View (cartoon, rainbow, N blue to C red):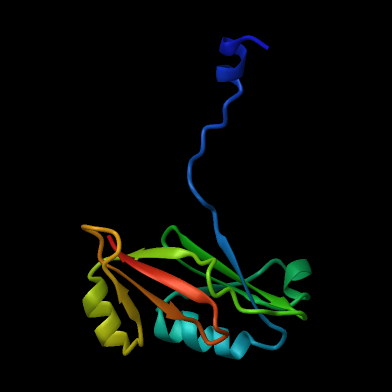
Length: 126
């Protein structure tokens, strides 16, 4: 294959549509309390075929998080989505979040927290 042929088939990435995070089966009430009640995301309906499997979806603007029920759930302690929020420090304080602040990336304001299931989330100022 010639180099110009390779260039013509390179993907043009545009963004991430959503992030899937696992939760235990039956965890929907805790997911709603945290992702909607604490983080302020809006729950959106899942297509009926998918809703039958459990879980719930949340979004705000271009941020979309899907919580999927997993019978063999194990929390993601390292892998995580990083969500960008304006006025991060004020939001954390207002929401009463328990976070772990990090200054490891110079010039970046960010913190980590755990959802009700022990999954790691990162919040970044943006």
